Length: 392
Image 1 (spheres, rainbow, N blue to C red):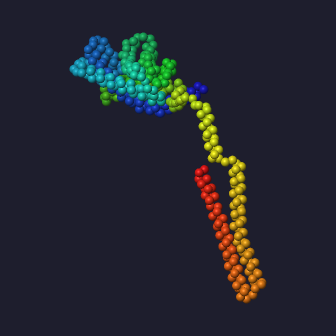
Image 2: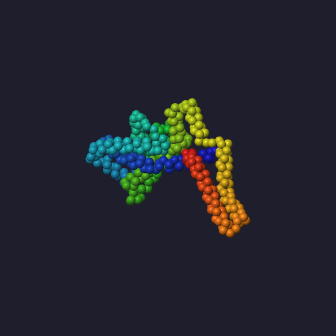
């Protein structure tokens, strides 16, 4: 039982990920996420230039734990140069609002595609979902960055390594849970929304660990730096989008059934709710009408047998009459010829032969004409039979 579940659930998840094109949806989410991070970073730089202070310097020294040296130099240069910060802040606000709406729309379509269910939501529900999305992803990114900065300052605590490994998934669970609970069009309880949330949080934590490993060793490669950090960030968002989609699929599979099954069940439920119950009396009348129509188009076995017997007897009589005609003519001619040779001689015998031949030919012609008359008399009956066969 448990082994079958361990095999069937991953197989069902893989099939649903392929069916819903989760990788394509994750690419769209990653693009708009990357576009939203840039204006968000500009806003952060503008705020940092305004506030400044020792705390900012401390944060920069802590950021070199998970950023490459080139990226840290770029950030320091941006903080010290305040030219055009006001215009950049306004532009970043507009781009941030646009990209946030696109992220919301992309996640909404992605969850609907994964679930196979599309329900029209009210404006208030859409605004609430937009607020959740607007704060969920940035909160996850800010939480991962904040933990990367703060944990090195608490290395003196016991079990700090285990705590650092568990703190990031915990923060991500809190950040992702509203999205996995609110976005699905299928009603999920908090307990049903938790498995996909945990999976997404653990996956993002692993990606954050990979990002920190990159930051540690990126300085050894001259080709890396700001460009490498940007490419890695896009890859991180793309893989993170895939993990979110997989988490949504896991929740749907664990709830029970595939989206195709739920579509069929939903359609059946909707039809049962909207269509009125049929009238039993009307159904009975329709059945009686169909039965009468079938009775008119069908024949009983006895009627078919009687018609077949009559047809066979008719054909037999016609065959006998047609077959005996030539024999009767031949018998007549033979008898008259023998009589002529027996009772007549000379020219009278020859004349009798001519008369017998002509009479025999005439009798045969009469029989042929009689048969043709019988055939002509049966033509209307045959035409009626053909018309009946065509109608049936």
